[in-house]
Structures are given as structure tokens and as C-alpha cells.
Image 1 (cartoon, rainbow, N blue to C red):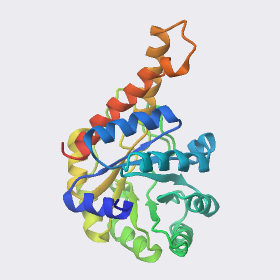
Image 2 (cartoon, rainbow, N blue to C red):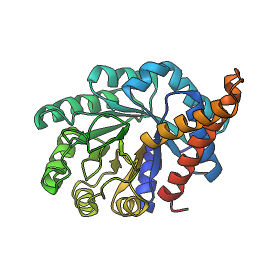
Image 3 (cartoon, helix red, strand yellow):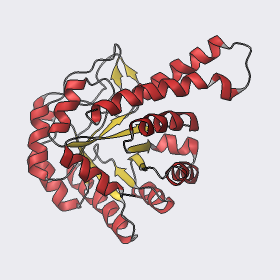
Image 4 (tube, one colour):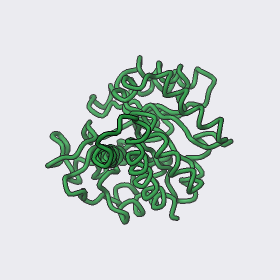
Length: 288
């Protein structure tokens, strides 16, 4: 079985992207896994700090590991948006395949310092844990929005600067970078977000030479994904669309079965709704 590092580098070389989908429960995990397995493509499961608190850190590690081992399948676990070294350490010690230290709201030098600390700890464990850094603020919440999140500036001058990104990569030693390139967390009501800045993605990728990660992929359109992938995006995050699909599927399950009290029965439409969204995204990301 390939390591996550091998999977990501292979995706970048082949100009495809690994799908990264967040979960909050087992039903969502099944939906995402079914989609990936049906297409025979690798997949990354993400859990934010809030999602980890809800599921449990050792519990989610055990869940994803069980899928990996039972099905001999390339499914990996990422500690999404982690805001302190202590919580990065907890995730690494628990067995996560990758971690993101999100210092996007910190001053540049402080972001470098804390990200580097996370990288050094990951290297000291003897396991091949990927560490992702973030440069450029894109918001913090995966939900449906009426407007671009407060504090997010999509103007070209506010996007991640390639030369600054190069300095950040060189001084931290990160394996992957999440830049601000016109993306933001959550998605606009109506389901269509502003276009990504493909030229900036290309410039950053050519300057830093390591895989890029697109956060806030919900709401972006297929042509944006294809352009981003062709220019260095090796992982794409989807969360808001997964949450929305789950909620809609759950509503259907409850409305169609008003007298049913067995969760495994009324939750089936939610699993299927998540699977459908994940499959659609994975087809685009993998050029299928």
C-alpha cells in the first residue's frame, strides 16, 4: 500500500487531485468510502478540531484504520485545521497520516515559528506524517453563506504571494501548502462561488515546488477545479457540500419514514446523498 506522501506526489505528477472530505460520523464515512471504492481512487478523510471533539481522536483513527485494513484500501486520515502545536501533537501521536497547522491568522513570523515546530515534531516520530501549512486567510467555518466571510479579501493583492510562500516553505520545511487563491471556507447560497485565480495558483506552484492544497472547494465549479489541478493543486477539500447533502438526505429519510425509529433505516438516504456528492467530485478530481 502506498503512503499518503506517495499518493499525493503521484497525483501531482499525473495532474489529478486527491479528494479530501470531512466527516462527523460513521454514516458520512461510509458514504465517502463507497464513492471512492466504487471509482477505485484514493481518498483522504478530514476531521477538524470540532469534528475530532465530537467523534473522538482515537475513535476516528480506529474507524479509518478499520476501512484501510479490512478493504486493503488507500484511505487516509488528516487532522484538518489545527490551531495549536499541542493539538497537532495529539493527532500525530494518535496515528493520523497528516496534519494541518493553520496559522493563517497569525503574523507571518509567528506562523513560521509554530508551523516549523509542528514539522520538527512530526519528523521526530519516525513515522511519515505529512505536515501542511496555511498562508492566507480564507475564513474558518464550513457552512452556507449569504456573503464572502468577514475578513476574507478576494482581491489579487490579498492572495498568497508566491515569493512569500517560498520563504514560508523554506523556513518551515512543510510538505504541502494551503494558499489563498480566491477560495474561502463555506459556500455562497445558490451554490456558486467566485472563480479561483488560476494564474496565482500556477505562480505559487512553480515558485515553491511542493504540492498545493485547495481548501474551501465547496461551491467552486468544474472548470476551476480542472484549472487548479493542472497547475499544482494535488488535494481538494470538500466539507460544506457534504454537510448539506447529509442534512438533506436525513430530511428525506425522516419524511419518508415518519414512524420509523431505527436509525440505520432512516439514515440510509443521508449516506446515499453523501456518496453521490463525493462521487461527483472524485470524478472531476481524477479526470474520470
